Length: 313
Image (tube, rainbow, N blue to C red):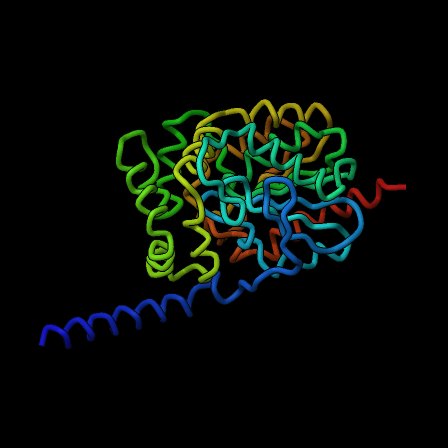
């Protein structure tokens, strides 16, 4: 009797998951992106396309480069597209040791050097955590960056603000935020039973494509915590944005109207203060904007490619 009840509950749960999964816009629209995966410096990276400039796509927290799916493949028609798994995440997961914001920047430099792209013009785009990283990386190379696009960027000015908003990214992020002992214990448990944790992530996130959900547990405590502190709980993105403005680099800050993760009004405030910054809102997008509104996101990047093409001799 108990066995039949458990089986019935499991079947009902699977049915609910299946309905949610099939009905998810992110699942319906996502397909694996083009290109082959190679090791470049410390990072696993997918590249495709040819031409100039180079488009660099930076993923968000508890994610990997596969969050930029096939809808971004069109960028390869006029540019070399580089999609890394960021240091400590996905295929670039490191076994131990802290990962700082500076480590991320150095890793991206090493990746481009290994690919022979050190001197190429750049358009840099980043989602969520990748947003502040995109601004900081672009500011370091502002002499050859011709545009920056942030998608649902996590632009926070202190740790308290970051923690309040990171909890809204998803259930895993909600558990891992904060300074108590629970986040570390939970993360180390995930590391110990990573395969099981991956399928738990799939079960709890029917709104995500299965490969994207599985990538969400591909990190260590050191890489997650270091990235949280080094990229999200620090305001270092703001002076980077000012340096980009001083260099005349155009920046697009794009958000979704249904996304609770960015600080309300911040992107609009930044755009109002700088003529090189524009703020755009997609009327229906959530924090999953690259998955559900990828065509719109790719179009924003293409605008910067078009500008760069007109500038090239």
